[in-house]
Length: 304
Ligand SMILES: Nc1ncnc2c1ncn2[C@@H]1O[C@H](COP(=O)(O)OP(=O)(O)OP(=O)(O)O)[C@@H](O)[C@H]1O
Image (cartoon, rainbow, N blue to C red):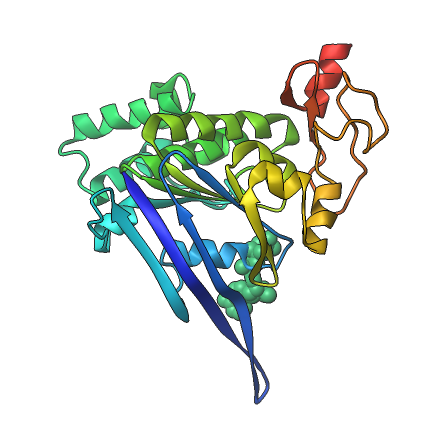
C-alpha cells in the first residue's frame, strides 16, 4: 500500500502585465497525509488553490518549495514511472478528458501498456473488460467498442475512473469528479469511488467546493482559503464546530443531520432544504428517515 506525505507545499506563479511582473502565491505551506482507505477532502472556493495542489501531486507542476513524499508501507520511496502509476487523477470534465477519436477500449488499454501491466493483446482486452465491469459499465464488451460521444457524462466519468485505476493506482486524486455531471447521477459516481477505495485500499484526495459531499465522503477536511489551510480536522468536527469565519460560511450551507431544524426550519424526520448559496451544491441532503444522504430529486420521487 502507498501513502503520501505533503509537507509545507508552496507554489508561486509569476504573472506578467506588460513589463510588470507580480508573484501570486497559489499554494502556501500546505501539509497533509494521504493514507490507504482514507479520504482527505480539500474544500475551498474557486481560486483557493485546490487544483494547483492536484497538479503538484500528479507532477503536472513543480512546487516552488516543500515536499511530496510517496512511500510504500516499508517506507521505500516511490519514484519515477512507479510514482506515475501509483498516483492517478480523475479530472473534473469527463467530456474533455477522453479523446473523441479513440474507443473506450483504447483509453483503458493505454495505461496498461504504458505501465507494462499486461503482456499481450488478449490479456489487455480481458483486463479492459474487467475494469469496465468494476465501474459498472455493462455490457463491458460492447461499451469497450464505443467512442466517448456515445456515452453519457456519468458513463464517461466511470471510464475515466477505470482508466485511472487500470495501471494499479494506489493514490487517487479526484478533482471535482462529479461537479460537471447531472445532479441525479452524482451520488452514484461518489458511491462507486467509495467502493473502489475499499476494494483497492486507495488513499483518496477529494477536491470539491461542496462541504456536504466532503463530509459524507471524507475522513478529514482541509479548508483552503487563498492557498492556505485555514481549518482542518475530522470531517464531522469541521462542519459541526467550525472555527474559522470562512468555514462557518461554508458550513452554514451544508446539510447537518445533528442540527435539527436550524437550517430551513424543518422537523426531525424530514430531510431539510438548504438555503441556496452561490457555488454550493444543494442537491444532496440528509434524510433522517432513511438515515442516509440522498439526492433531493430522489427524495421527492420517493415521497410521491
Ligand atoms: N498556470 C497558472 N499561472 C498563473 N496563475 C495560475 C495558474 N494556475 C492557477 N493560477 C492561479 O492560482 C490560484 C489558484 O488556482 P487553482 O486553479 O488552484 O484554484 P482552485 O481552487 O482549483 O479553483 P477552481 O475551483 O476554480 O478550479 C488562482 O488565483 C489562479 O488564478
